[in-house]
Amino acid sequence: MTTRVFEKWYREDRLPHIFCTGCGNGTVMNCAIKAVEEMHWEIDDTIFVSGIGCSSRAPGYMSTDSLHTTHGRALTFATGVKMANPDLNVVVFTGDGDASAIGGNHFIHACRRNIDMTVICMNNMIYGMTGGQGSPCTPVGKISTTTPYGATEPVFDLAELAVAAGANHVARWTSYHTKELTRAIETGLATEGLSFIEAMVQCPTAYGRRNKFRKATDQVEWMRTHAILLQKVRRLEEEGKPIPEEHFAVGEFVHRQRPAMGVRR
Amino acid sequence: MQGNRACCEGALAAGCDFFGGYPITPSTEIAEMMALKLPKAGGTFIQMEDEIASMGAIIGASWTGARSMTATSGPGFSLMMENIGYAVMTETPCVVVNIQRGGPSTGQPTMSAQGDMMQCRFGPHGDVATIAVVPSTVQEMYELTAKAFNLADRFRVPTFVMSDETIGHMREKIVIPEKVDIVPRKPLLKGKLPFEADEDGVPGFAEFGRGHRVHVTGLTHDERGYPDTTDPEVHEKLVKRLYNKVESKRHEIADYDAVNTDAETVFITYGPCSRTVRQVLHDHPDECIGHLNLRIVWPFPEETLKIFANAKTFIVPELNLGQMVREIARHTTGEEVLSMPKIGGHIHTPAELYAAVEARK
Ligand SMILES: Cc1ncc(C[n+]2csc(CCOP(=O)(O)OP(=O)(O)O)c2C)c(N)n1
Ligand code: SF4
Ligand SMILES: [Mg+2]
Image 1 (spheres, rainbow over the protein chains, first blue to last red):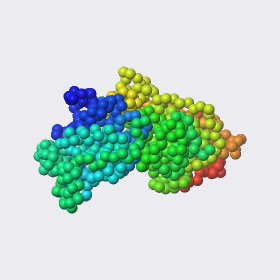
Image 2: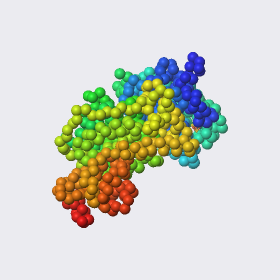
Image 3: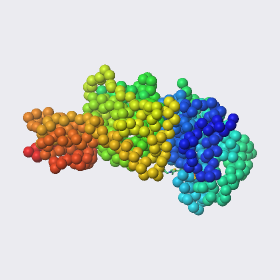
């Protein structure tokens, strides 16, 4: 498949986009488009929904019907769309702050209801759009404008949260792992119920710069070297061994068939 | 029939097919009845996790073409404000019922009040114009709820049913009309941009899933729906249009009863206070006491004040510390404007109101 095929999913008349050079969001958008294309979804049956943040600007560049809503509330709007018309394919783009801080309540309830939609969270571990404040996903010790001495609060593990709350399909990859990410999104699109895909992304402007990543690629390289396959993490846990510091699990956290809502009639 | 039930029946008759809500006294019966009736009528009921979510859900549903609605009271209404502003900016038709109770805060859950009249007008941040209907009888609850859907679709604005505990929980006989007029949403025509307004200031609706490929955003946007957040002209043009499409039509939207129009002393009321004034007029049939009952308070129908050409005094009883009276005073030309505020949960007695008339003799 050539990139030409994907172009129809983008609004050329919206270019140039607002993302900084080196931002990881575009990579995730391409993976998502590749996945919907693989699913043979139609542009006119597909709705992209988002909240507020850099990540949430994604739907604005896509040639489908799209709903760019209020900060943290994307899942509530998406719930209305999908429950009112289950024949539409609904994909939500959200950020770590959007999904887990202001939108945390909606996040767990959307997972619990297991509404038939795919939620892609671009986790850059920071509030990108507002210039780099700490989020519930900013790791302990990392610098943001509101954690100038290093973040002190424990972080949310969004994937584990989605599993606990009831989502049918949950995976985490990074903007380095484009093949795996695309496949995870595709599986998500094909799964009845809520699929939650956490995509760790670099944010050179608001996160990398303050946290000793000189270039965007340094942060991508960090993600490559610090991502551990979930199976390995589980093995370490079983063996009672610690997970190396600053490392995180990637892979498929759950894939199941709990009853779902808003499934195509 | 109970007022809250009449609200549901009116909504269903108007073709409401999506309800998202969260329980709160004294509006809960509406959600309960919709849960019972909507699925059987082919619609969708969903109990959301809070009122912010309810508001989001009904906006999302509306973009699929649904006639969507929620119902709440003070605390929930406050939570809805950001998404109500979003509905204004994105021109999303929806109906929000507020069965008002005593506030601020949790206040008096089971008592009547009209304390949210200014909040429904100015609640969201930024300059907005919306529509608010207010029933004074159970019959009007039915009719005005149905009408609210038509207004919401016609003007593409959130439309409020600003009722209160008294009317919501009152039981009265009502006559259900054989058919309720349904004025459908004007669709987007080929060749038009999704936010390009027609003569009337309202663009055709680009329903999701119909190939319009519309981008909907609460950011300041151009006629294509694309964000343009720094051009002062784009912002001014958009927000003025959103404002004027409602405000400039206030005459057409107005809905009221004017009784004894040659009176010198005139009551202006909306909601339950209108009932007390009707009693005063009934008790004093030989006296010329004017009464303006407003069924639509926003946009404020300022022209209606001129109907009372001989008016020397406008008396405004309200179940708040004086809210609509300020709007009335703003549009009067020399007449005395007397505020009769009342809070605590009880409505005025006819004797209280009549005393104000007598004092002016
Ligand atoms: C109610 C509300 N509060 C605050 C904001 C300001 N705000 C805009 S984006 C944002 C944070 C976005 O962070 P995240 O969701 O992680 O997205 P990112 O920009 O990092 O992709 C905040 C706080 C807002 N728009 N609305
Ligand atoms: S601030 Fe960060 S997340 Fe936002 S566009 Fe720039 S690099 Fe991307
Ligand atoms: Mg972020």
